[in-house]
Length: 102
Image (cartoon, rainbow, N blue to C red):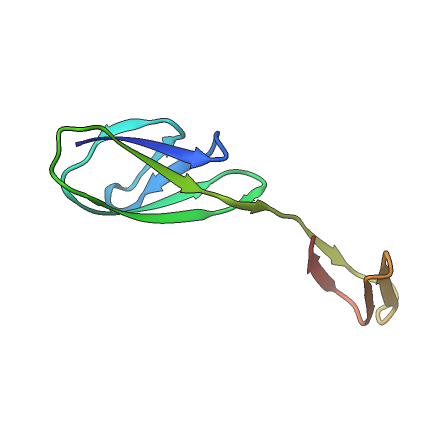
């Protein structure tokens, strides 16, 4: 069966684990009937995962793997160690090497 693989948002790449192949968003490939694990990646987004069951058919199947919302992380260190860290009044921690996802 012909399958078209997409990511949402567009522009990612999809790893087909059972085939050990990485394909660009919009790629077309022929898959035999069976179960496939798809992992999508794109810079600035959390990885997406989809498990699809391909059944015998002559129709083209479109599969979209959604990516997670964008994220960033910040790591704060102080010198000397032990300083209080304030971030826009939201974070007020005593310590060093503090990490937060924003």
